[in-house]
Image 1 (cartoon, rainbow, N blue to C red):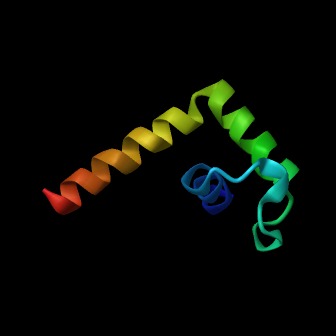
Image 2: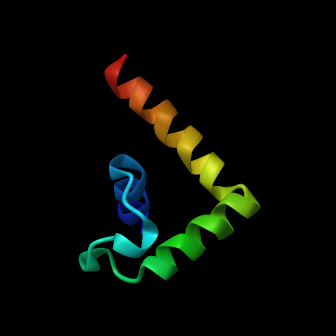
Length: 57
């Protein structure tokens, strides 16, 4: 699911044009909306950025 979301934002592809190997575009879109609403998305982004900085710094 995270790969589908990352692909969408990295390429600018519309949700409906996500490649089939990511599964349902509706599922990815709805999951991101749910995660954004409950704060999960921001928490995971912050954690990922922190971990990335530790690995490169």
